[in-house]
Amino acid sequence: MLRYTLAMSIRVACLILAMVVQGWWMWVFFAGAILLPYFAVVLANAQGGGQAKSSLPQVVAPTITIPAEAFSQKNASESK
Image (cartoon, rainbow, N blue to C red; front, top):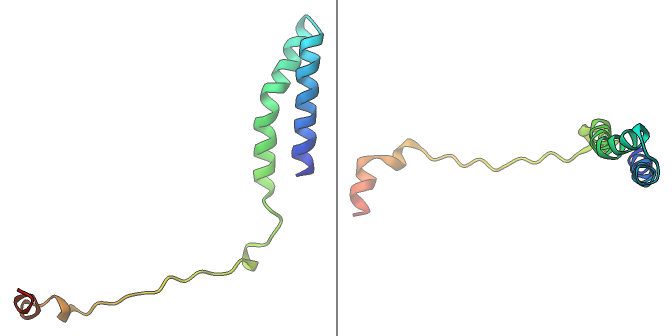
C-alpha cells in the first residue's frame, strides 16, 4: 500500500509540473501522470495481500446424490 501511495503522490506531482513547465518536459510529465496508475496497480496486484493461501479457510460445498431409482418409470407414473 505504501508503494501505491508513493506512486500516486508522484502522479500528482507530475500533473502539477505538466501544467507549469513547457516544451518536451510537459509531455514527459503528462506521460508519467497517465502511465503511473497502470504500473502502480500492476505492482500492487503482483505482490498480493501478504497472506499465505494455505491460511485461508477451505470452503466445501455439500454434495447431493440422487440414486438412479429416483428417475425410473415407476416413480414417474406414480406422480401423475
